[in-house]
Length: 107
Image (cartoon, rainbow, N blue to C red):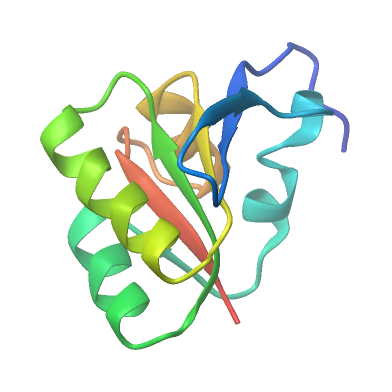
């Protein structure tokens, strides 16, 4: 399925700098299609600590206190972390009716 609207997203790289990711149009497609994922900051942080996360997504409109914890942990563990335009988009990609500040694809 192809997204009908562009998704504004950023890749938070290992060099601790924010750069625009290429191909943002379908950035949430892997999250949408993942058979195993975690939704929510607390669950994502727990899965990151257990080494179960392959890719993480955080919402740019979420509380920076929460998203910084996720991005810092991803950077420490060399896990790709993408920042999307809104928590609503992450929630929709995960198939839930409420916004989600963070989500991740499990290994």
